[in-house]
Length: 184
Image (cartoon, rainbow, N blue to C red):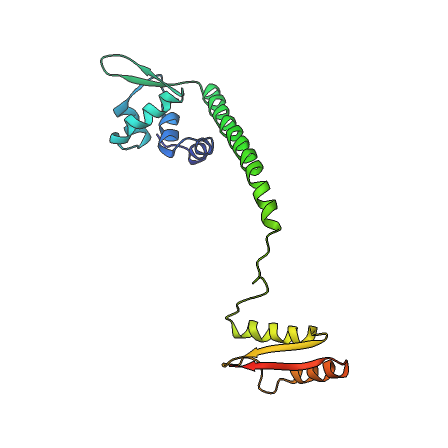
């Protein structure tokens, strides 16, 4: 029997494993299968089919049929889908409750953490020379009264830092101070 990949994928979306979906879809085609028959028809390894059948029985999607050789039957597709949907709804409800409890527990911690200040928050470590040069140019441009700098090679600003020269002139004209750099 060729199993429809779409139906297998739909059952997987409802919470079954691929093997469980293949076995269930095979079981619906006949009144009863033995474990060996369903393994062959569903193309599931025989050593795995017993675990798969057991899982389907636990989920009440398959019914064991006692006999000289035990067989298995599928419950009706409507009932199987209803049961799988109920399991998904229960799982979603548990997730909803867990997420609500988690949000309630973490919100006070988050709120308290928003008021925490770090004395070193003003320090930003940059490693990319282009980003350093762009930030340095932006700082020079935004300077209003004073520009302090700490310089240590290698320098990433252009050698003829015309923006810096314009900034120093602008600050001095406004009565402020130009750069007082510390050179390391």
